[in-house]
Length: 477
Image (tube, rainbow, N blue to C red; front, side, top):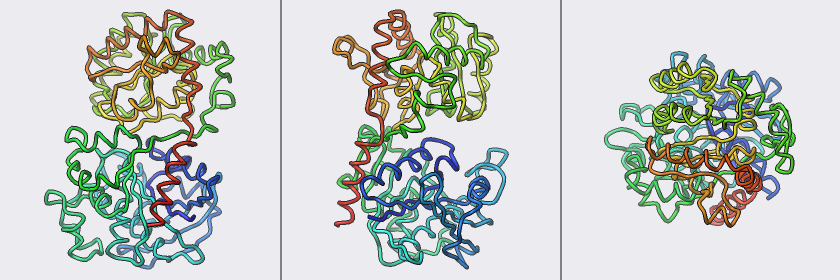
């Protein structure tokens, strides 16, 4: 089966979050099932620099008013189609925001162009290759099934995966005449409270919808989590699937990871101490036996970082240490930096994202805190399981699906893999941390939790099988 995947990010070429990891890892796993995936991504400057040997395979003289070329290349086992459209993607800053952190004002056009290119490739524009179906990801490529429905033929089966419904691609209705769609597409698919909703359009037109965990699939049917789209999703409930993400077990393997200070396994947990020492040195922490907690996250309200800032002093008072890697809301950055200033040697922080450092943090910290108010799936807790870094997580979405709470019954059955808490409040997190400290104080129990987490099957194996089944169902009609 041939599948066209359309996405705005793909690891290892461009990454701002977990979307890139999924888009990069899933095609590699699907290969063993006879699924050949070609992934269309934008030609950002960093992407273009990494694919210097790519070959032109398709030209667009007028892609929403701009010229573009599709380049093909195989990069680290991934079969890629790169949309080289300098007017849209050759600019400083990030994929979605400029150097000042502001959204590009033409994001509506940039990602409509990506989607239109995807729809034309789906319709057979690429010489010598025809996909059997199309898989799109989040709002940035959500217009692909819209264009497939209203602007190109034939219409292939399509799947849209919602990685985070909070990001919807909502724009002024005034842009509609520039999208190259017939007038009735506005009312049938795109109209959203008087505006245009890209994600809403994808949900309305794709043949199936998936989210990245079963719990999140249930949650987005409710107003608390549906972010205004719960009604649209409820109307498509029969076509909604929750498939939990996996991780690339080759990239995230403490036994062979070249980015950490010392390799280890569940059978050689004592060797993990080398990473703990290196992590403490990296952040200037005091070298003592108190547990090291880490946070690797966007610093936003959704991620519960305001709650983390509120409990940082309590964590230190109990004898713990905290290291933070992330960027986001300036007020939250300032609050966490202030905690680091109050507690030198006990709290350390790096603003930004650093892939090698994130590996060392997973390998060296004793526990990771993930206090998200909602979390479609989450990958950091999966990496943590793999590395023996015990997750302390909010009971929501994919966190609930992937972590088994260390209650008395789970500990007795030797199946516990972490600590869950609810609701997301300072007091609830304080109680979870107190529980974590008690568990950490018992070496035998703590190692049992670590080893059980490291044994968890968090690869793409089972999830890929579910995607294969869904793909086949869609292609068969």
